[in-house]
Amino acid sequence: MAYPEPLERLVASFERFPGVGRRTAERLAFHVLRDPTARELAGAIDRAVRETTLCRECCNVARRSPCELCSDGERDAALICVVEQPKDVEAIERSRAFRGRYHVLMGALNPAEGSEPGQLFVDALVERVRRGGVDEVILATDPDAEGEATARLVLEALGAAKLAVRVTRMARGLPAGGAIEYLHRGVIEDALEGRIELRLARRGE
Image 1 (cartoon, rainbow, N blue to C red):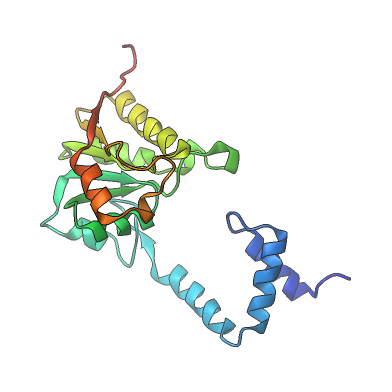
Image 2 (cartoon, rainbow, N blue to C red; image 1 turned 30 degrees about the horizontal axis):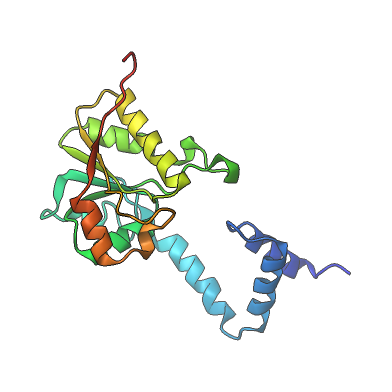
């Protein structure tokens, strides 16, 4: 017997979330039906969609554009730290080891899971650097296979654009396969201080 149409729609909605299969979607849907505060969840989702936007400078999620970090005149606009997700910005900010600006790619390169180069905000980074005023781009993607592929993608894009900018990578003291969001403050600080310079590969060389 099929579920009632409203419940089936709820299950299908949960299935659209990354990493959520049919069984997990069903568990979530039934939990919502049993939870007396479920209407609060619906309201929270609606408010998050209505009251957040992407910063036109760094592509991070924010209440307004430009965001607070991009609007902070005390931060070093010549130094841009490139991360995969907004949660990585939060992790680095908690470490208090960085006083530059950020650029959020909104994902990592992983074609097997549907994340293609065109879905990442790499072109926005290139245009941002092209406008001038940026001396260094720090690649702070996760130290796993997807993060390394993403770092290479950004490096190649900057090189192809023939931009005069220093590109560095967070130091290899980061645990292999780890995620920036879970790292201890001291690990992030050491990785930023010990970052290594990368050579931009330019077309025709």
